[in-house]
Length: 284
Image (tube, rainbow, N blue to C red; front, side, top):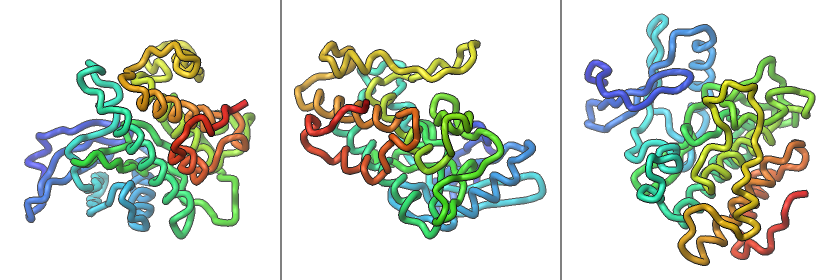
């Protein structure tokens, strides 16, 4: 199915993805999980969760394989790869997809999160919303992927218990890193989404992952330039300015330090669907 695992598509924290083909000639992505402690549990988690969900903005699990220590997950192959390659390209000007498309993608991701939080039999906390884990099909419809760190939540509990931080640095909510900042909840995904939104607007990473200094969350300076009119991002028309500012304002609400001050995903969608961004208030 994978031609000897020769066509590597990418590599993440939990495994390597290869291109494959089913007997029906359908192209697929095969994620082979790393053989490290804890990956077996993540494999079971991903299979369990993916078997319960079906939404246009969430990847669909086609199958899985477990043979001893070797484990693999099979998904549809999406021709445009991950969102990461479009918002952090080598030449941002030549690869820029346009603000209308970015707005559609941001809305699609939000609707995928809404389904995970409110549309399943049990709420699902993803824990790892970031550009690498958002795949794009041939029409640039976003698909949330990689549920190895996700957690099924109780409908009756607003707080999620966990023993260790999980996620990707730069997207993890403060309370995921330390309980001193509040309780882990569905609002932790909102924070990750907000950081993703700001990177989509700025076309740059909010944190320097290569830095040897202790990790700290950056408040991107370019946001002030955008909201105060001194714009240093790819803006071509007046309508583009409105979309960029709307995404930036929503992103700022989502990355509020205290979880209780962040909007629900349903409110996020309402804000994104607001035609006049001037009706959106700035966070305190």
